[in-house]
Length: 276
Length: 172
Image (cartoon, rainbow over all chains, first blue to last red; front, side):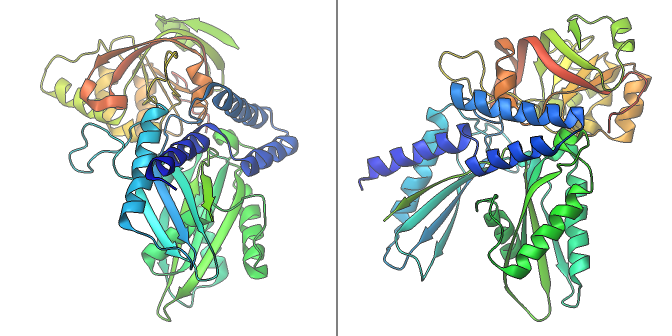
């Protein structure tokens, strides 16, 4: 593929992620609406679905916070990656933001002046069992990103303690994190790895349960406990505080147990492209 | 559903109760983090500010860029609590109403009661829907802040809910 074509593909990925609500998320929102009985909660969910319809039809961003663009690049064993390739992906994202009139939200963290599109974050991972390359764009809005949490537990901590921390993190996120949420959880690794796993879990399909039996159980338990918080859609109360909980794990050190929580608002946006 | 138009009289503010649904038409101004910081610094130093604050409505919002042929890009509310510590000087100058999303501090709740102001919630994460309610957009000040600058918006039937009323009662 030529560099120009690759850049164009990235620009289209930006449009897809920003204008089109993910089909799996749409499904869960519809399901939530069918279950809600509280008028304000129903109204909020209808508003979210109507917003998605308008965004799609009018090529308008689902949310004005078009996020900090995060790229997950997963390369199979048959792929050779160059820094030039990553650079083109990032340039494609930046020009996509500009082309599609998305918000320039990035600033120098100290100077905080002249917002631009510069600052795409890329995570590259080589997968031994895969072939080809998968590129996922995850524009992360900061209303919910600001609610991220990390806790370094003792290795003797119980599952109940871990669950308690995750539920408390969502409680703190509250109405301003734009519920109903999708909650990403990373357990294990190092501090940074736990948070990265939490973020990465959000790009997986949210309407499918975890293939690992133990993690599925944990996700279901958290789903129930978080919805019992009754924060509800847009914070107006109701049954739907969380649409899905996703957990990923990694081996960790005998002395520790990092737990990272990365929350997404109801406007969970991502889009992926695969090259063979 | 109550329809209200700007300029809003104080007595109309008193008639609104927490939880009331409102369709707002008229003029509002966007202002968020950095603008608040700059406004508060200017007020402290007694300098002129590019916005007449008295009796106005501030919308915590940084819109997306404007696509070709549109009035405005996606333009939903941002988290109000980040402005909590920068709110009193504006209320002191006569700010009438704020529009945003989420909870406010106890201090702001008390200030809203003290200054007989009001806090509205706009539907969060619904910036495309809200963009259709904006009829006009004009840059007013702090151009260098990009989407964070002050914009005057003329809105029609902008859907809001009273989050904190003038008696300090909160929806959450």
